[in-house]
Image 1 (cartoon, each protein chain N blue to C red):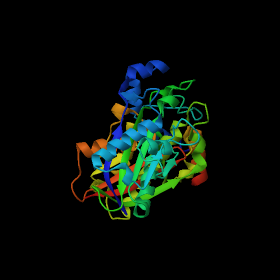
Image 2: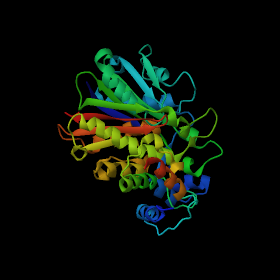
Image 3: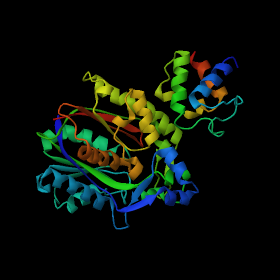
Image 4: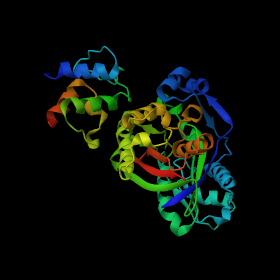
Length: 77
Length: 310
């Protein structure tokens, strides 16, 4: 996954945790990402990739794993 | 548009601490405080119906305003926790206020109900006269349904708040209203008959963290007001962490958002008006100062109302 290093960097920045999750690891189940960090993650992705994520795409499952984030970004870029 | 002449509120006397509430779901008090900002909440007695609580808040508001109930043109009661599917608590509230025959309208909405009622009252007052807007909730009857969930049972409290909306005078002039709804998220925060509350907390927070600042910005931009120029934000007291996040999104200090969630928990549609009642007594705004009401709730429904101090 080309974007993995950048996604990890964003995740670490948002959560303030030194994490290195597997691509398919649930960031919610592992406790990496809580409800209040999720909006920050979405904002950081918008900023990093120069996109505006519409409210209709704000489904937490789209951002639950690095693989899903990457898939969503593929569909938008 | 219209004015708010006074606020009122009523809260049960029974204090439920985090220690007590946390024990129901195996959570420690500090965890509850950390995830919500809540330290205690109030629970009503069995005999405190939603209508009874609503009428007490309404009477407090009318007393403070020096207005007789018989002068009201309409009573509106927002609640998502009425004891019955129908009738809602509005007609009984009007009866308890001593004004049977006065039209009484239920706004059966959780969390954003008093904001929507306030927005409607702002537009109706010119034609029907003074409107008593009340938000009243007995959330303990919902939060304690089995099976209790850790992320739900500890969040809620009971109470009622009220605002008197008048067509021609008051301490706050209602300037503009921005309301919105999207049923695509109905299942993310809902209460089926006899069932425990269903809440997809991630979806609620994600949507609220985006939609509430956008609604506030929309209503402010129409009047060329920057968020930092708002004297006070009176928001539905859902979660202190959400309030802080919304304040940050708007670029204003969190302290600008009046907060009493620490003492009362999330009282759903009652919370915004309870907060307003306490805020006005503690920190009356300077004349001309903009004030913003905002809420987000099941539906999803959300929005903001702009007022200006007189």
